[in-house]
Image (cartoon, rainbow, N blue to C red; front, side, top):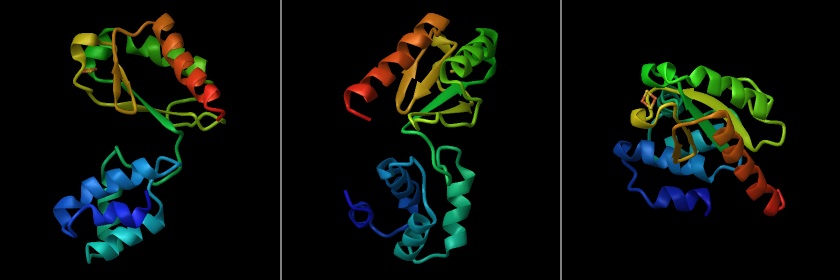
Length: 157
Ligand code: FES
């Protein structure tokens, strides 16, 4: 879908800003918002680039720098912390060979932290894109990451 088509799906009102930014980012191969995106949105909503930039940079769900195809958000809030999420961080950085905030060289994953994901009963928990994973163990992490890697490989990426 072209970016102009994304804009056209929403009436040009500020109340639609987050939805527009979200759809534009989802459409991005780099999983981020470019300056061109922000400029286009500012023009569409008849506001300033700095206003749009302020919103896009405020919310952690938006990125202004290129990221991997899949965003892993590991919960760092108290319940997950008590359930051993630190060990899961260690395991994940070992599996991906990157630190928090980084993107794998194949651009498949970006590893981020998050506040409570609303999955406390499944702590320790994480999300990959829109999918939640809980009761994480070293073994389940390896299985989950392997699944994404295999899917990517089968698609010839
Ligand atoms: S504290 Fe981790 S999901 Fe709620």
